[in-house]
Structure formats: C-alpha cells, structure tokens
Amino acid sequence: MKTSTMMRSNYAVALAAILASPQTAHSFTLTPPKSSSSLTTSLSATSSSYQEDLTFTPPNTFTEGSISEELCTAAAQKMKRVMVPVSTDVSDTGFVGISFIHFEAQKSSSSSNKKTLPLLLVHGFDSSALEYRRLGPQLAAMGVDVYAVDLLGWGYTQLENVKSFSAAAKVEALQGFWNTVGGSGEVVVGGASLGGAATIEFAAKNLYKEVSENDSENNNNNTEGFVRGTVLIDAQGFVDGIGPMSFLPAPLARAGIKVLQSVPLRNSANQMSYYNPETYATEDALKVGRLHCL
Image (cartoon, rainbow, N blue to C red; front, side, top):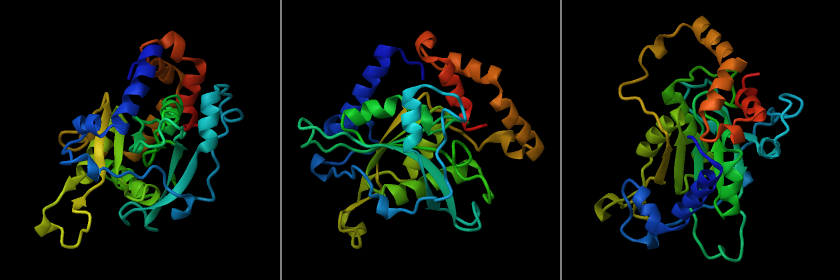
C-alpha cells in the first residue's frame, strides 16, 4: 500500500477508531452482532499460555543487515517464535514454529474504559512481520494490541522439518497461531497484498456469528467463531487454487528464492511500495525487505 506521511498517520488513526468503536467496527464485520453488549475482547495473551521456540534467535538488524532504523531494531528485539499445532500433512511432529511481534497496547487514562479489539496483521508476499514495524507502534500508542505474524515459509518461521508450505498450510499455521497465542479470542485480522488472501481464508473459516438456541445447547455464549472484522490492504486472493505455481519444480523454486534476494528486485519493489518513496523507500527499508532472505 502506498502511503505518505499524512496518509500513514490517518490510516493508523482510522484503524484505531475501527477497533475501539463497536458501531464503527460493524461496518467492517462480515456479519455484525445484534448488539454491542456481546462485544468482548482479549487485549493480550499471557506468555504462559504458549510454548516459545527456545532455539529461535531474533534477527540482529545491525550485524546481519547493517540497518540503522530504530523502529526496525525495536521491532526485531520484540520478535518471538512460538510452537503452534498443525496437521501431520504440514509437519510430522504436529507443530511448527511461527514468528511474530507483539506491539503491546499502551494504556492511558483516556482509553482505560474502552474495549478495543486486538489486531492480527499479516504481511505480503515473501516479507516478514517487520513490514509493520512503523504502523505497529502507532496503533499500540492508541491503545490497540497488535500482533504482526509471519506466514509459514516466510519471515522467520521454522523451515526445517516442514513438509508443506502451501497456501492451505499457511492458513492452517495462522489458525494454530491465533488459537495458541490469542486463545481464540475475538480479533480483527488485517492482511496486505498476498497476505490478504490468507486473511480472507482465515476470516471465512473463523467468522464470528450468533447461533440460535437450538444450535447452542453446548455453547453458553450463543456464539461461534472469533473474527469480528477484516482490514484488507491492497489484498489479493486466488479464485481457483494457485495455478501453475503448485507444479513448480523444487530447483526452480530455490532459484526463485535467490532472485528474491537480489538487491535490484528488492529496490524496485521498495520504490513501488510507497506513495512517498523519497521519505519511506530508504536504504534501510530495502535492507529490511530482504533481511529474512539472507
């Protein structure tokens, strides 16, 4: 998404307003609840509720990428990797390591009585959670709990002993992540570019809805699902599978990864990604975009 300085600030303000106001959020919810009284939130998950991957070391933005951008350094230092459940079609162990950054909501006296939905952010193609290093802190300062997550196979997720990195596997791991870290609490999900495709699939499978008394004998809350809204940022979605990409031979796939590491390609993408490239398409931004490939 192309953003100028003012647009970026306004975007953060708008997102915060959507998440904090049930009336506003309803317009972004696929099937809104009948009353705001049913709106519940899980502002943050407790670290004791999930198992961290102790083999994971957050990226060192200075030694690994020679990156001086303070927001990137701060975001990288927050990064963790957690073991989430998946099917044995994805991993024989039944678990994979998914990396994420938690921009914890900053509480203030003015927002202490507000119920604000947490926001789960999904990055675009061959990117990482560091894509949200600038937006995450702005939303957190406004009282929004933000979880920027890496899609399986990209960012800093586990790569070894994983059998599938398919689109379905990515959504499955995303589901496992929010079940584990978010406790399946109500959430708004945002996705940029190709991450929007995963967001659409994830939201459709976990859409919040009220159920009738006949269908809720074993459900005390009379609801099911937990996705209360979506924010799609230049989102892409597949109409019928992923086409010929699914038949791409492994050697060609590996060669493609090498291409994605190239500075000329990353520089071109960097220049196209911002409304104001002179301000935001910096040398550091280019380095951030390829850091997870190195």
